[in-house]
Structures are given as C-alpha cells and as structure tokens.
Image (cartoon, rainbow, N blue to C red; front, side):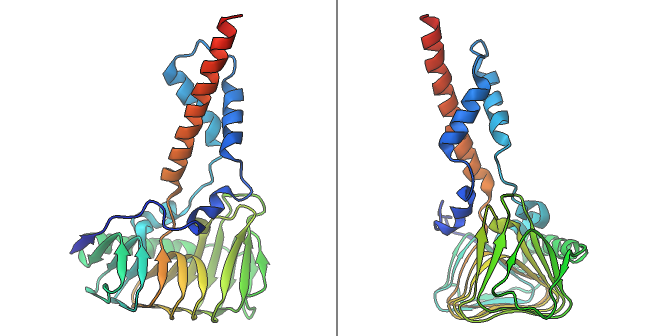
Length: 298
C-alpha cells in the first residue's frame, strides 16, 4: 500500500552545497553562453534556446545515482524484511520494504515521500538495488584498505576495498580534485561500522550522489554520525540515535532499524539544473535582445 506526502522542494542547504563547490556561478554561465551566441542575431528563438543549452551543457555535473540504482534511486530507506523506527525520524524520499511487509514507527516518524509496504514498486526497487550491489561488487579496486580506519584519510576518486570489515572513526574526506563527475566506490567484505560523531566531508567538487558503499553483511552508523552516500547492504542497516544521512539506506535482505534519525535521499540534479539552465537561457535572451537593439541603431 502506498501513502504519499508532499515533498519539500528544498530539504536543507547541505543537499545542494556541493552543486556550487568549485563550480562556476550562474553569472559566469550567463557570460559564457552569451559569448557563444554573440553574432547570431538572425537566429530564430528556437535556435537561440538550443544554442544556449548546448553551450551550458558542458558545465553540468553527472549524478550517478539514477544510472546505477534505477528505480531504487528515489528511496531514502528500503528494507528487505522490515523497517522499524523509534523517535522522531524524518525521511525525505520514499520508504519501502520488500519482500517483507512490516513498517513501524511512522508516526511519530515522518516520511516526505511515498511509503511502499510490499507491492510491485518496492519489489522492483529491490531488484534494481541488487543489480547495483552486484555491479559495485564486481568492480576492480584501485586501492586496498583492509585494516585501515577511514577516519583521518583524504581519498581521491576511485574504487577501494576491504576484504573484511571497515571502520570510520572521525572524519573521512573525499576529494574530487576538481572533477564533479568523480566516483567514490567502497567494497566492504563484511561490516561497515562508524564510531559516534563520525562524519564524511566532500571537497573540490565531490558530489554526494557519486558515493557508494557496497557492504557484504551489515552496516551500523554510530550515535550522531553524519554520513554521506548510498549504502547497499546485503543484510541489515542500523542507524543509532541521532545519526543522519544524505544518501540512501538500502538493505537487500534484512531490516533497516532507525532511532530518531534524519535521512535525505540524494537530490536529483536534473530539476535543479533545469531551473538554472532556464535562468541562464533567459539571461542569454535578454543579453542578445539588448545587443540587437544596440546594433540595429548603429
């Protein structure tokens, strides 16, 4: 059975902070696009709009979530057996369980999205999540981190693996090195565990929707952890009290257990960039209109 609540357009500044990090401002986009269309005063409106979109397309970062996760992309939480919550958990994105049917604790928990307790939508999301899990598990790692704590590390783009468990104590920094399309994939043989108050930081253009954690058994986020990225766990996912995520908690077979948490599914950049592109095209049209007027009076 599906239940729907209205999704807020923006659920917090954090979700969009990386859209602009080390990127070009809207004003710069206007300038570049205007420069590219200068001298085409005889073009009709449709041609002008198309030229502006082509000129701006090269600036868009690539969101990998929808490509890799398919229908599971829109889920903040997806459980295999059950989803349970205590306290005032807030989910921004869809909530689902399959093949199990039990979802408890909402309310007092709140879901800004659609809830699927079994059914074809949740089942398809699980199928797509499994495909993504297998895809990530089959990648060739560029670095082996078995036995190292992720806390205190700064990692560039690439695929890292742990043959057994992975631990995060403190702050992990993911550095895209100026490439907003950079991927950060982690293959973990057994468990992923974070200590209390641990966190992940994205720098130099890193995008939260390009961070993936493939977990061989179960993931546990410690109290007040601030986590980023999509967790795909073969078994269960547990968020202890006060832990938060920007990303997705997707458990293939086991339960997702929540305790006064805040999880925001990664925003699709499409809508945001469509708005920015629309504003940019409007700016281009205005610039060219003024330019035409000036040149026609010479």
